[in-house]
Image (cartoon, rainbow, N blue to C red; front, side, top):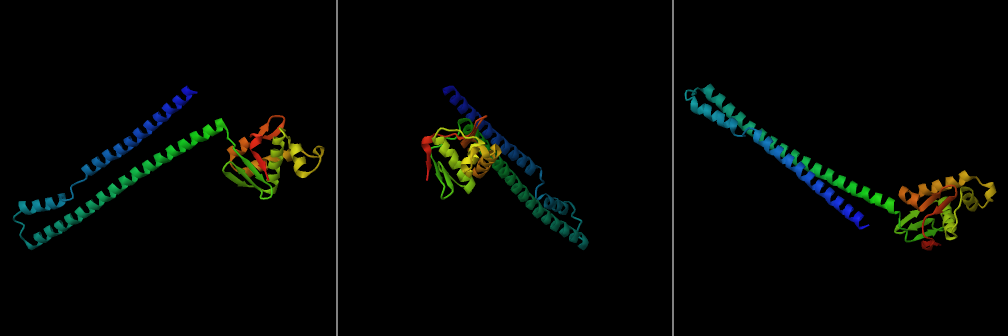
Length: 234
């Protein structure tokens, strides 16, 4: 048992370490990509600097049309700077959004993985039923801290199984149908009782709870797989 617990602990630590490394790797790759992307973008003032250089190197541009052309170029440079600045903002927002989505997706994967492992543990260990309270009048069932509201037929089927469990009996389909309907077992069909068991499991909803609580015993019938001391009926 100690070896199994130690193995599970080491496995959890290994998974946690791998998740942390994967998260750091994703963030690191996006950070490097952002740095390279911003570094490859031209300087916002590059266009204005080039226009200013034209003014300085071409002192002969003194005509009205030449000056007007240079003014238009200067205005174009200003517009280019504004557009480039907006592009930088958009790229930064998209990168942040991508990082957030990856982190959220990873968190969901971790949660789903933990839930899956927990469900597997429950399946292996079974449900530890501390109390089962059946109220025929209210048509409700309280299993530990979970409460279910059932149909009249489902509550009768569960009540019959509970009474049989108190007497350490296993009921087949025909006997269940006879006890619920009030007829003789010889006049009841096995399939009718099996149908009642199926409807009871469907009414309980949770597949794991219904499969463990209402157990099928091969070639014998059905029973509640719980300690009879926890059963209470009102």
